Image (cartoon, rainbow, N blue to C red):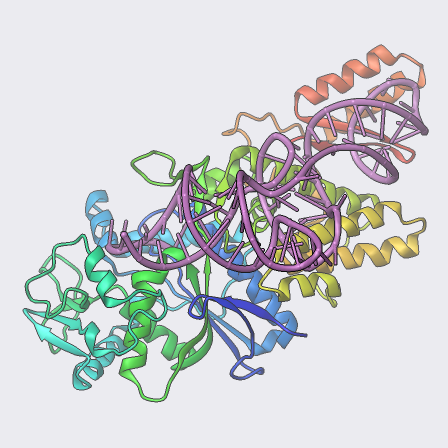
Length: 471
RNA sequence: GGCCGGGUAGCAAAGUGGUAAUGCACGGGACUGCAAAUCCUGCAUCGUCGGUUCGAUUCCGACCCCGGCCUCCA
């Protein structure tokens, strides 16, 4: 097995060789908890969830450590709390709960550690002190700033030169900065703002510091993979890297940097001003809470490419999931088998820089073979293979019956659905069967049409009539 | 202006120096009372122009579009 991942720093696919195969470590930037998670936040969650699943499969479940932080101190949080007239703690607690619920709906496994910035203030202060001591940072007007020219290969991750940065700078440079590119490690807090006592007065950490500190604390100063959205490459990850490398000797920080592409919605960049800020919850409501459809849509495009999220695409993904679940249902495979060795081809597709679109196409191939399988023995084998392969992508984790019949995790009434009870549906089906028996096909079709109008589709099989919800 | 990524069938999206996976949609056929589901089958010369090559969609160059980053952002 050879895993290859595109490393942002080198700009090419590299063979993945973990520092310690018995302790593969990855750090992914998690949410800043000031508002509901949107569909753009969902992409790294899903992409790195697949990476986590792959690494667990390849190196063993107990040999992978996945850390995803929660940023719970930040100027946006302060602003949002103020706007809501709500204590910061309440805002962040509420938002974290919603975040967990949202991504659970996307079948994302929880990370092994989910550290919070506010629980690492002491370590942050210590790292700032180290940077000052090593002459990589300086104290000026209650701020502590990282002095960018002090680091020789600053810009190596984002492939920018210092000259470019200055040329492109559109911000007014604060007067206390020695160099325009210098960035804040610690900044003063106003009395009404959250703050912690420090050698430089009451204040709070700069944006990048938390990830340097939390990755070191939970993964060590050198670890394997650092992931996040492409927009984090600069300045966040560049600065994180600068802090972490300059604060220590002989460490490598992240060996592989992986970044997912951006998400647009209906062809437009998501932004609050455009009013197309689509939350995960809203998106899932469009498919009655079937998170796997959203997941399939996300994974249907390679993670480094831009992804345009559309309602049509989501509905199509739902139809595609129907196909896979139909194959399982027709195979009589109601068992959800979460374990077992995933099919080699699927694993190999993922080994090659997470080629999820190829992996998914292999699932369709398996579904086709399953549909054509002549006997129960082969069906069982293929169903199991399809299951384990799909599970690697976080798909097909439900019973087919549940997939087709439930309205999952949403308030049906709020969606304007009548959500017929299964008993009532069965009753109609019995009436229709009687009509068919009597060759009264117009009555049979009338019942079928009536159910269809309620979103219930019928399928006649040799074993009898079955139904599924159409949306 | 600098950096990065895209442009493949109606839509979505893989991939390869030797005439292009897969899904959805659509057409034909089988099956069905009719459907649905399923199966079989049809549907693209890969942004433009040059170059390298026996041969390029795949390599090189130029150009044209599209998106992102350079300021908070997944």
